[in-house]
Length: 97
Image 1: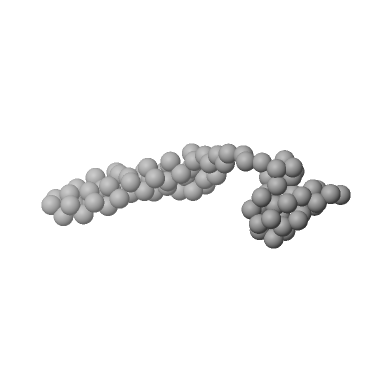
Image 2 (image 1 turned 180 degrees about the horizontal axis):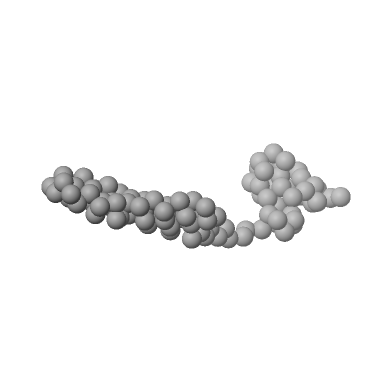
């Protein structure tokens, strides 16, 4: 088991070691797990439903405040947006990945 020199800190390291013991630099001959692999993040469908639901809920609250304040009998317009918004938000919470 020969020793090699770490390119960063010049420490003598076993040629079987996956990384330098002093500085932690991965060595070129280390296991395949240390190779650079791209990290891919995906946004699940649940996040989209939560965002749309939150926006509809806010739109319903705003519509309920302004339209409902102007016309006492038109409170249903706010609920028309708010109830589907809450339903979509809850659906997104259930299907969030």
